[in-house]
Length: 544
Image (cartoon, rainbow, N blue to C red; front, top):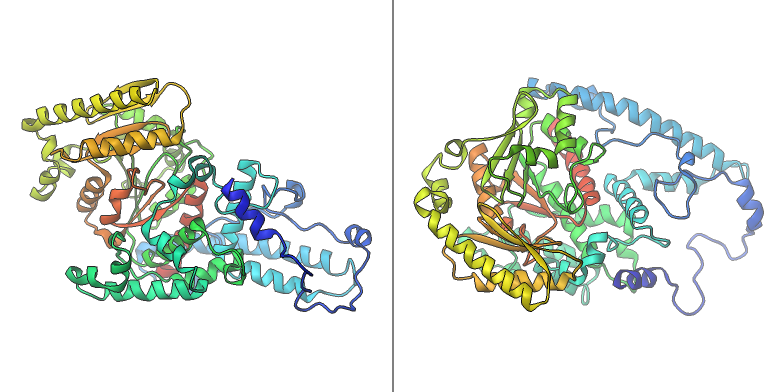
């Protein structure tokens, strides 16, 4: 309901006479509405836009993330490792740019002479605006998919994600974003973001032990660790081409819009050094409770990152000890694509799965199947990681059992108190409850927060979180998993980017903030959007 109100306010005209368009003349004659409608040829509309023409009108092929304007002259003296990347980018560029250009000419001629018989300058300006920013183009496609997926019969809003609408305000929790939104009450949009960009840069210029005294950390004490300066003004300019945030008078940017701007800035900042991109699974790569299907848009994006030398890992709470097939079943579409494309051993070796938050590591073998990696290779390889996993040593098995018993007793008692009919699931390093019938999100929040408080004095490291459809308490957390994976691969937090959908206080992605840079998404469509931007930025940095 809140998203609906926001959209109405954003589109409803103010009382009084509506101002004339900036370049319009009051005496200018307008062609009759019906005649104009018959004369003009319908423009192609992105798939999924409500009220647009049918899909047949959009005859030009979809543009891939690898499409662009690169050719051999853009990347002189490339090292041998980048030759395949240069060739792939150049080939895709020529194919896609020519197809798009041909379609643009077709639309231009069909629209120009239909009414006046003369070319229209407005069309050229509009086409220039549409092509001026890759972020704006990708965002239009994202909103189109949201409108189509949610079956909205009105203008799409950035707060319309099915996840956000179903889970309401509890899903929107972030001290930095809320601080920026509050600044909009006293600052213009561009002024507020420019100040935050400067404050973040000032903080990063200080020694680590003095950053808490910086301006931004004094105003946002729970900001967390930031690894890169964030080009927020540049991100706003790109985003403004689509949403016109700086032109609004009565509706300030909302939480979701600020989150997108910060994400775009983080993509630009991380692209220069990123070596490892990690993803949450449910709600990030595919819908909650689903699996990797063969038509998942992220399959192409993951392979693109791996082919240009970036390691990709799925870090998930799902844990199946000694049962690699269950992990495979969740990633079947992705693994089948690896096999179909015959990925080389080198490329295949850049894919990893960290299961049970941090307790199992799997990689792809020569048969394109997942197999467990021996803990002596990745977990107990040095003293630092052994300290992180002290609970997993044989002598501490009883402590883990006692902790899980305590967590299970609380969850079942609290579920009974809330009159929830639940099933209990117990694993090697986790215990959780699954409601047998539909329940409200707030009750799951109550359970997860209560578990955090009840277990706050536990010796064993843990993560109590609301999974959206269940509540689990896991031994270990994603912070431990990311630190260990980065150590195993030889990277640090500034070279790592984690993409997830649960960075709230009751989400299992929140602990990652201290380990590496993050992107907070609300749906798999958003993940695809930001990975398209990241891939383009990496190509620009490494090829141009």
